[in-house]
Image 1 (spheres, rainbow, N blue to C red):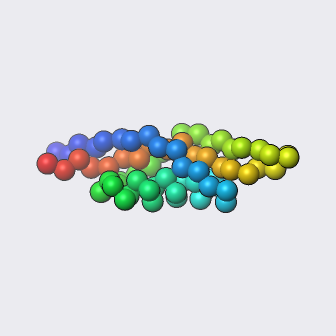
Image 2 (cartoon, one colour):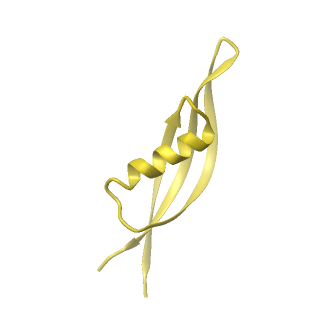
Length: 67
């Protein structure tokens, strides 16, 4: 039997939504082992002078709980 824990995170990047998702996953992997999947909840962005300057991705990261 396995147990999965879920964390909700927000990643950000000036380089696009995919980069924001990857930033969140990479940062989570520094302290969380056995990440098994993610769910993208929402995308948002900051706009300055009619141009997108910062992309954000709200994600849920699922990982196996050991023990």
